[in-house]
Length: 565
Image (tube, rainbow, N blue to C red; front, side, top):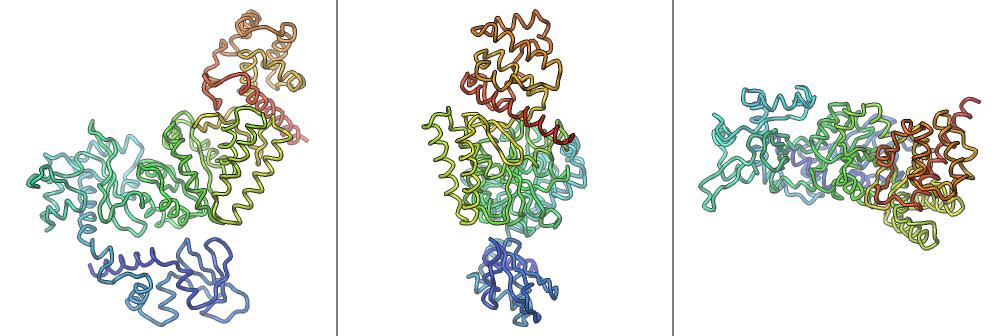
């Protein structure tokens, strides 16, 4: 117990003190980035600085002599102290009383939570956990992953041994069990107490330092809500906790990148597919959680569910990241299609496509740009002014001066480019996306043949588009000969009958045998991929869409030609 309390105290001290603040009291540090400092090593003689201090990682390392460690190692080495003495010294700097720190005050609650995790884990493996084990098996979660995440099962009330029996036998009082969030009083007098979690898959929520803070739980029956977290208490404050950080800390190779997602089941599923992931606990991500994520990795992919709620949560997360951006940190926002969550997307689309999605995620610059584009109703000066103001206002929210200037420069280039080429959305890295004018942020993925079909279907449904695109499209040859034949016929018809309507156009094309190639003119498969709902499709918006599609076709053909040459 004593050893555990000492470890808990050291964890609290680390959370309060920046390692650079501690080390800079002894030696002169030169800042080389948002979280990186260098200096002449205090442990050996050198002329060129090789001593590195990393605030976000919480450690130092000298590439000259090899000395490394955390704040305690540094103080012990510099002042020739033992660990207890270093803890005492640093606790004073952190303003923490050794006898009154959060871990010591709540040691009883931590013990209850730890014992409860062991109880739930055992229950998962006995006869009562059979249905839960089957559920995990059906989701592809094997025994190894269950152990890694310490998954368990909270039994029915009629179980031979309930959690309350188990904990009271261990000497814990019902009052303390209620304080831990694992039981609740069923009457005002408090004489009736029942477990907080009943017949649920149990997911321990563990801090990055290995402490059980609370639990998440998923129902296995018709109990509502489907997901349930421990109630807020002295140790469980869900807006300050990221799920999965303990597993990330255990695997240093995961520090290269991580995925930030919405829920604990997403984290477990992604880990099952080999992806390091963390999650907020079903709530909108907070600035505290964003800071924690940025300290865990330099490369973060934000991947939320592909439904409306997930997209809106992604936009809220973007606002938080924007304010807290740091040098050396790369954030990408990944929008999933078809209302799928990350696990569903991988199972339906495959790992390869999911990895491609990550690679093509939107940067901070892209997000600002596309959110601005959503405000544009047309290419009139008034709309452009609103668009440009939005982009510039967003950039000004970035607190880091160097990043703000760099991102502002890139966006000003795009604004300048768009002023002279407003037909196209010119995006770095040869990526072009189209945005709607609602809160959705659907980013279509369509191959070349689908682009051909989309161009044709747009003209069929909006024949007046012919007059808008005839100069651009007449010299574009579709590599798919069947679609090219339809395109040529379509242009001939529209040229000969400039006032033709959609119904007449469909009839002529059907009589010529082109209906089957165009899915009997069923537009749902094509238009559902556009970042516009069917109700929002109008001539002006379709002009932007078809310009972009033609541009993408031309660009892909140029790229192919360059590759051949």
